[in-house]
Length: 185
Image 1 (cartoon, rainbow, N blue to C red):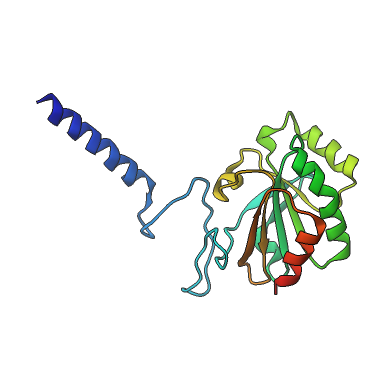
Image 2: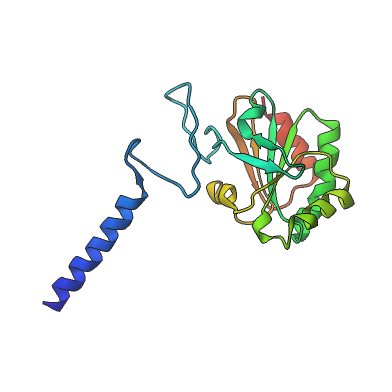
């Protein structure tokens, strides 16, 4: 009798987890922090694989404004997830600044703000490295979760159509960045 009770209880818990994670309107599983967006072509799929439409997001900038990924549709976009305490992130920031100044690419540097002591630390970092590209603040790391970020730095290269061209895990050299940007349309 106890075995049946445990089996039924376990089956019920698994069923509840499945019920709770399915987006019943689309029939697809929902991701934590998932943000919906319109898809113009039914064959377009929003996702994190190369060729997918990159999931949209809107975040506060370090300067107090807001930016959305879709604001940059029609442009090449380099989305980088980073933190001030991360040595590989520190190493690639000067390369990113050079890339931003020398090439036709928008850089959205998404700081994992929840992992920082405070926003002032992020501002000091920007000033110390003389960064001029937008710094976005992921206060609750919901966008990092949406993009399944591990490790940092991690980068997504998004083409002019909003599709993920490539994904890079770990720090990149300037040459690696340039190569990925030049491969995109």
